[in-house]
Structures are given as structure tokens and as C-alpha cells.
Image 1: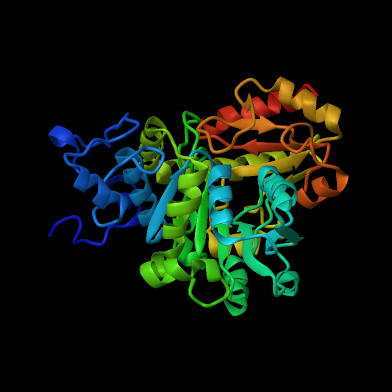
Image 2: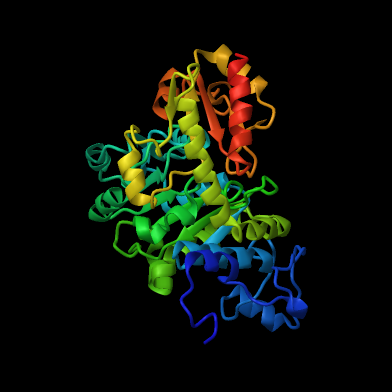
Length: 417
């Protein structure tokens, strides 16, 4: 029996899934560092442009290294196709603009990552697209927020940095009843904690720069089409020619042929290679991220200088039950905690030596940041409250170092406040 004929378990898929032999039997994906691709005849190139033949043309549109990454991500999420982009925000922008038009509404989580919140509230408003924000953990609010103009529901698996956990299958049911697609940003959980097929998402988004890469060495994003939404229902007339020709691939076809091609937010081949390399160790890293985060949360909860700790893995978290049910008893590598005030938060961050103070998550290294003065600094008090951001809050992306070293680093910094 060949590997292709055998149903592989998830951890094995991470290493072997979608991987094809490279030149001279290479077992890693080759980096095809070329901007464009030559063809033998004018007829060959015409056939590719007209869709009669498959082939590479220009790296902005497609590249063999990037194509390998896309195949693997689609396989891991249980989707039918994927599009790799230059960043997570490029993935969100491309996916959303494929669906919505002027006059449409997006129903979105009020606790979104700041970049996504800004895109929805400010940038898209310039093009006549309205975003309505609701508490994603309140299914009644979600249902009541859907209107005749709603064309997309957008949530995160775990809010960043609020760390709220929506009941995504329940939201998926509401979206299905309303006849609108559900787009889920699964950056924080990755397909290791839950695949798109398990959650009921129609489209899955990743900032692959984070846990999928795992080392902070490359930036990228991905859109995974689950092939589950009926784009020919009549509510999306701009999809009609794509639905007729491509059926359940209509979303991917429209995204590739129009928005992705025209916006040009493609990844560099070298970044696609680095992101592909990160996939192989995802399971091992996510296990350690989750284990370390749980132990660090418990340590912080018992420290007298820590006012509160927010981590879905703690049993007193209001989101513990939903997170446990959806994510197989794992709760991600993100946590937040509060100190006395902003000054104490700054002194703590300045006092850590192992952890790095920077604006990223999902690195092998432990990372800390003060969101109110950095990634959320452009927002006012009302928006920060929606995101769960306060002046005393410190966000931690817990790395995969030895947990005793992480705790020692935090203990020393806390003791010196």
C-alpha cells in the first residue's frame, strides 16, 4: 500500500502530506527562486492563460514552492484548496474583498486582532463596506446582528489578545441558516488544535508567520477554502459565473483570478519554503506551547504581584468549557495577565531577560508585549475595552523553552517590580 492510498494520522500528515519528491530525490521542497517561467511555444503559453493547460507563468500568480505550501495547508485543514499570501493581513484582505462589495455588511467579532479591526472599521469603510461588531461569545447577539445586508461573518478561534473563545460550530449553524459564509481566523489554534472541517468554517485564515512558521524567520498568510459554501445561491450574483464553471471551487477561482492576482500580495518563494519547513514540527511545538502556557498561567495565578491571569486553560476562565470542547483539551500558547498598573507592566517587561519584548506570537521563543502602548496604541478607550486591552495588561506568547527557565525569568522580573 502506498502512502497516498493509506489514511495518515495528523502528525504524520504534517511531515508527509502533500509532499512530492524533488529534483534528484530531494525530500524537502526546492526553492524555485524565479520571477517568471518560460514555455516552449506560443501555443503553450496561450493555453495556460486561457485555462486549457496547467502551468506556471509568473510568481505573483503562482510558484512551485508556494504551490507546495498551499497543497499542504489545504490538506491539514481538510479544505479543497488554499492560497498563500504575503502576510496574515494580506490573507484577510484578499479573502474578504473576494466576497464583499460596496453596500455589503460584515458581522465581526468585537475582540478582533487590532489590524483586522482597523481593516474592517476604517479601511473597508472607504469602499462602502460596513462592519458591525458583536460579542462572539454571545450567540444571541450574533444571530441578532445578521441583517439583509450581511454577506460575511468573521471570527477568531481564540481572540487576540482578549482570549475569548467563541462557540464556532454554533456560529456556523447561524451563518448557514442565514445563507452567509463563515470565515475563521485560526492563527492562534492552528489545525493541530482543530481543523476547519471540525469547526464548520467555510473559509479558514492563517497568519502563517506565527505558529505555523514557529521561528519568526518568515512572514506569510494563507486562505483555505473548505468548499462547503453554496456560492450559487443567488445572494452573491458576482459569483454566478464562477459557481457555474467551478462549482464548489468558486471562491478559490474568484480569489485567484481577480483579487489575489490584482492586489499582488504574493509570498516570496523563500518565505514559502521556510513556512513549509515549519509545518513539519507543528504538532511537537504546539504541544509544548500549550503545556508551558498552562504551567506559566498557574505560576502567575499564585504570585502576589499578579492581579489576574487570563488563560482559557484555567478552570475558572469563563471560556474554559468551550475551549476544552473545541480544542481537545489544549488552550493555545497565548496568555495575558495584569499587574498593578502600566508602570509595573513596563518594569516587568524591562526586567525579563529570557523573554523577548516584540510584536509577534507563535515563536519558539517566549515573547512579551504591552498591547495598550504598542499594537493597540492607535485605538481609543472604547475600542481597547472591546479588545480586552487595559493599561496593566501584559500579553505573553509562551515559547518552547524549558518551563522552569521561563518561570525563573518571570519570577525574577516580578520580584524586582
